[in-house]
Length: 405
Image (tube, rainbow, N blue to C red; front, top):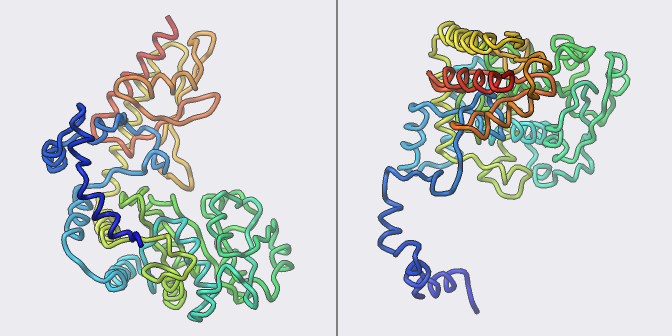
């Protein structure tokens, strides 16, 4: 019978490389030398364009740029073997100390933390229930969320088999509570949209005896948020690792009460028969996340803020030199809380749409990614390398000036 091992061995004996690469691609010796080169331009080989990130920490744009210290930590981890549970234990203890909470674990992003945290609440330490999820027969099965807090990432919670129950007022929440209620979920980015704010939400959870979970994926900076919500009384909190913390894009943090983190870990790799088996975080990401967090906590956040402000101001000044162009500098109150710039213009004087400006930036040299809607182009600088703000300012001004001539 043909096995995977015998198949690989038989393929290895074939003149594959000679036949495949002698036709003008790469000879086997060239391929090996190419793979060993430390100066390979992989993206160029693959036909990929890199870009200046003037948009922000979007997953589609691959999040943040890893600092050298984080890369070194991940390289270090890649050279040695340790047991996955052991490194999660030790790194979790260190993170919990740094962030002044009972316990912590590194997850495969904030969405993974939503799934694992919810699963841990449902199962507790009952391993039979761990295997049973998402079949919730005989288990609590409802999660209450404010209707104004609905986001696509709730799918990460629904993966556990729960029913999302939407409410709008405190009375509706209290009326929705029953023996099936497992969790109260809060989306921090929508704190100002809901009729129940964070502090009151926590108090209701305590009164009902139901755990509360706050999704704070994009809520760093400010640095204080890393412990603010646990101290407020939330039982579980999650942050994305690859946004403001500048850790691995495939990592996140789940913080919370010791018993809930321990229960969440039962659903995570290396365990196999669980809802979280596909949410693997290996030693490189775990250690990289710790290095990123330590680096972030040690930064001069005031100086970094001044840099972002000066970069945004430079771009604003450059584009406002074009007649008919207006700018607005602002800082979102919640989520992606960094100096940001909205650029708009009089269409009678500058005859181009914001979408066309974004396309021109994306398709130009260098490529620049921005955000915005039908009325403006949006810019942030916190994911740029120093000096790239000048390139962005110059290209924006060129495009707007050409459209106004």
